[in-house]
Amino acid sequence: AQSVSQHNHHVILSEAASLELGCNYSYGGTVNLFWYVQYPGQHLQLLLKYFSGDPLVKGIKGFEAEFIKSKFSFNLRKPSVQWSDTAEYFCAVNAPLNGDYKLSFGAGTTVTVRA
Amino acid sequence: DVKVTQSSRYLVKRTGEKVFLECVQDMDHENMFWYRQDPGLGLRLIYFSYDVKMKEKGDIPEGYSVSREKKERFSLILESASTNQTSMYLCASNPTGGAYEQYFGPGTRLTVT
Image (tube, each protein chain N blue to C red):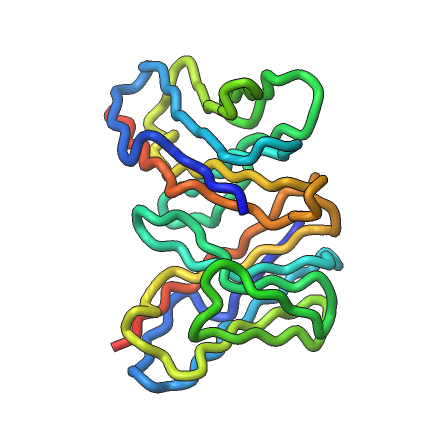
């Protein structure tokens, strides 16, 4: 199974600051990559996903992520955060060509945006 | 809109009780999953199912079992609840194929006392 590492456990920043959350995975073959978000009291929902093509992926609410194959990374970014971006963020990966459709999740990063 | 519903948002059970967590999806998805979510550990896969009456163990199946008698319903069973099973339990579903996102239910916060 793949392992997924998220570098930051808790990030605190002010509104309008830029956000970057790191994600690295261990599998060397073809992967699908996902970022999920869980707002307080809400269910987990998809922010964005990468399957193939342009390594810069744009998602909902102004988020984007860049897949860098050589670094086994899929970092999430947002140029200017809002208070409503306070949430927990999870990176996930699967390896479909390996016949493995199960998602492996990182430990999550809690983001707190101060007004 | 895909909808994944779970039978309870909050549940309190005693040690040794048999616990059933129910999950229903309304999009005719083949795949269904049960995770537990714990602070600092992310989501860990307990069991999953690719078809009716089919199940496979995930990363942490010990102390759990599952049942999938109908395509839309996937049940997680704690045969004899223990305090270390206190957690948030999430159900998810998606169509067959690795390119599809998983759709999650709201979760059940289970407390075992």
